[in-house]
Structures are given as C-alpha cells and as structure tokens.
Image (tube, rainbow, N blue to C red):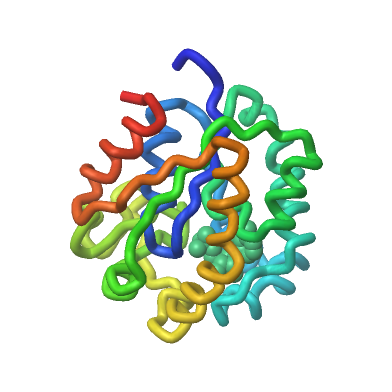
Length: 215
Ligand code: AMP
C-alpha cells in the first residue's frame, strides 16, 4: 500500500463492519480495532471496566463516552497502530469523534456501510460469534467452515445477547439518533465515502476495497 490508512467504519449494528474490518486488516496488514470486542473481552474476564459496561451493552445502550474514549486512547498508542488502523464501532457519538480530533489522530478515510433497518433485523438472527477468538460468522451469508464450531480456533460459536430482536431494535434507534450524525461530521471534513451493503459478503467487500483503493 502506498500510504498509511487510518480508517473509521460507520454503519448500523449488523451492517457488516466487523467482517469488512477483518478483510481490510488482512489485505492492508493493519489492525482492526473493535471497541465492542474489547468491551466483551473485559466483561468475559470480569475487569472493573467490564463490570461497568455489562448493563449498557446487554440492553443495547451505548457505554459512556469517557470509557470508550479511554479504551481507544490506550489502544492507539500500541506499536501495531503506527502504520495505520481500522476503527470498527468507534466513534459512535459526536463527542467521541471530537475526542479523536483532540488526541491529534488524523483520520484518512471514513466509510459508511449502508443497510436498511429491515434487512438488519432479518440478518441479526443468524449472526454467530466465537467466544474464544471473537471471529464472526453468519449462518447463511458467512457460515463457519467448521459448522457450529469456529473455523479459526475450533471453539463453540454463540449468539450474542445483544443480537436478541428487542435489543437489536434499540441498538438501531441508538444508531440513528447518536451515530448517524457522524456522517455529516465527516462529510464536512471531506472524508466520507458510502458503500451500499450487498446481499453477498464478497460483493460488499469488492465495493469496500474499490472505495479504499485496495485490491
Ligand atoms: P459492537 O460489537 O460494535 O456492535 O458493539 C457492541 C456494544 O458495545 C454496543 O451496542 C455498545 O453497547 C458497546 N460499544 C461498542 N463501541 C462503543 C462506542 N464507541 N461507544 C459506546 N458504546 C460502544
């Protein structure tokens, strides 16, 4: 790659940000950083931050800005971020985006993956995640080669609590109210690119790579 990519992926929960982040990460050799995954890991290991975050995440609400801003501030200082990174699920509010600016982080691309609410709701029921390594699958569009086990580490696949239909509905409301305004925030900076999420994963990946100039 010619230049370093510091990318933000926007999009509703279930739009496919995590999957695209993994593909871009492999192609561009930069880390994909998911605040959701970091929080779920903290909940699983029972850290203080995890205990605080649990009630928010399980009802589909956002974890307080200062918590996620702290997570990102620490994570971006790691050595593997010096040649670029992908942010999957951060920022999710305007104050979080402003905090990134204040940290002096210069974002090069913002890509919004657009999928209708209706399709999100029907998709979420099929999502599966590996409890051990965090890999994500979908029973129809992206099945694990190992069936109900993880294709990477062989552990059991599970359904996230916040993929429950009622929780999905509140996450969509939160997305429209708090996260969608970020499209305007980054459009004004001339950074926003839109990708229409496709039925087939590989079609969305092709559009995503084209938008980023990757191949
Ligand atoms: P995700 O895996 O990105 O869908 O995130 C799952 C959940 O983690 C969200 O529904 C929030 O409760 C929490 N979360 C993840 N990232 C953020 C963020 N940037 N701001 C606030 N809460 C977040």
